[in-house]
Image 1 (tube, rainbow, N blue to C red):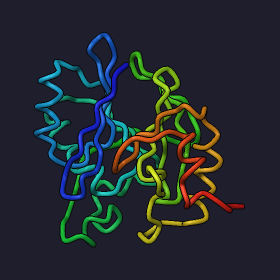
Image 2: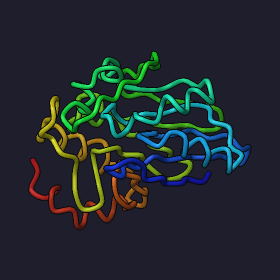
Image 3: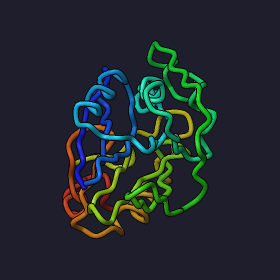
Image 4: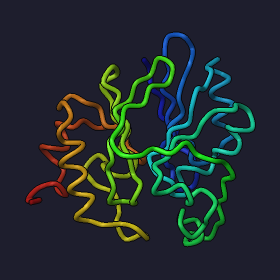
Length: 210
């Protein structure tokens, strides 16, 4: 499997493509510049099977309409945020001078689960704190985890937006992410990749938590 990071939008949120040898792919967090994402996917001659959302803040969902206009694929989102797609107050766009509205009926994720989509298998881990429906997608076969805005290289997600909870976020990171194999590559919602080992050793936000 091969992953590609594509920073999009004014906040440079990371959209990701995870592709398999058969030419299929899944799209993680198509946050903006949907037409460009479609172009990149077509350029790579990939066939999308699904959109996976780590959470439904505006900078992670804004490109969905363009993708769905090109491919009729399911959109996976935690049930706690199913209303956020079409509500600018909940998805945060209203607070940043915009109004992002996505009209689709997501396939709800409920609880910790395993998600199999074509050749892709994900251990879906609930990692709330940045937002109430945040999840992380761990792909053991590729030794990667898409952590959304829970865990970054050297930092963690902000918790001052509606539904954020700092203690809950730290608990999520320690119980659901730092328990992954240390060599796991962390693909965050913003910024460069890191590893579980690196964050355990050097992330200043994770020390002294109890």
